[in-house]
Length: 484
Image (cartoon, rainbow, N blue to C red; front, side):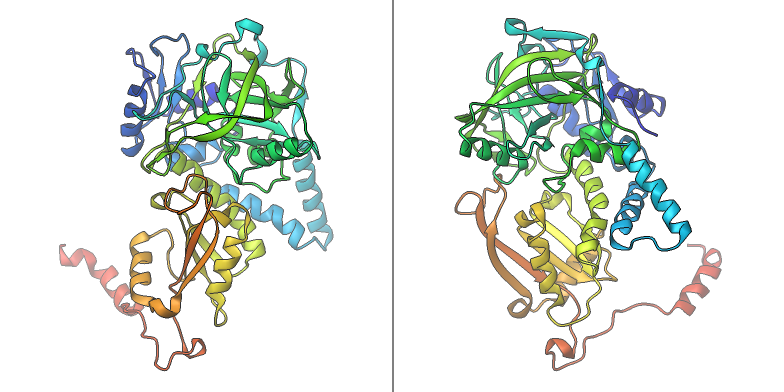
């Protein structure tokens, strides 16, 4: 089940009663955010605002705002189906096929991967209307101002496409963009993101500009993949094709040397000038706090292309859980097999909404030796953007890391603070407001695993209090008799 574009997904949700079309006039200035925030926090439906004041374009929001809806967006009933696919793919690398049957299956899998690589087309829905020069105006978009102290309206669900000035590899990231005026916007390339690396490389090479394309909309998998923390050299468009089991169509832009998703609703074409910075923010962020104003690169618009009847996809963040929580949880389930490839002792991982992803990582492991939990903490801090994690909690393999009540009980019961707490220092997220200096601060690791004599204990670790299986079966069989 692969959706061709955002409108096919909206029709799917409509058929299942999981979309509300709002015909009442609403304002993009705060009002849509308040409606969406109430809806996502109550587990409500996706929303399509058909009458946004001052715009002819409807706005779609909360498309990924439940676990079920995110799974549907990714073409499955449950995200675990994709986890299994990734595990099978990684198995080809980790455990090459031996018998003829395995080799045939491998050839089929590899052929499937080749079939889902990006496909360039000559004509595309996203270029049905082409606006260049003075006709290209960011004011045609119903861009939201989400929170009262926001510096202005922000484009919040863009796919920002750039190329590495050295390797030519494409990167696609979801980086917010503050609209300054009809022709310029902020480009929130945070320090540790790939887009920022492209920018720094361009500065080092003294380039005049970096071409940037900003796609709004497309198929829901591609939209979601823009926020996926993939390794820097992995093409997000290729990853989207693998996940949806169908190639993503791309089309060459009109005024810049880049390609954009052919099924997008809008494509903003433009460029960034290395060395040019402008104040961006504050912005009510996914941390639940306002990220302060800071200097970021500037996007200059050269053209807007769009469908004849476009839909503007957007999202809002704020105090968690918001829509991004459900998108991020699906990403964690998909990346778990990759974590296991480098850390085979890992059983499960949870990055709960309360930790806004980079603040808290809970890992369960099959513990084999003293110090094993500390090894895993440092391995997590060395794994891509998990380097930004402020707190890592390690528990035993039998602990359900998705049950925060159990995790809290294990932590409170199992730690001896002088022995089981690790303090370290390293990079932290640009949005972290607690560190005394920007982008660098302290971290905490907590070993909440059970300890034995091998860990240096002089007394036995107590067993968990659990009922015998025999008694459980007895009560199960007689439950109706009790009349409870």
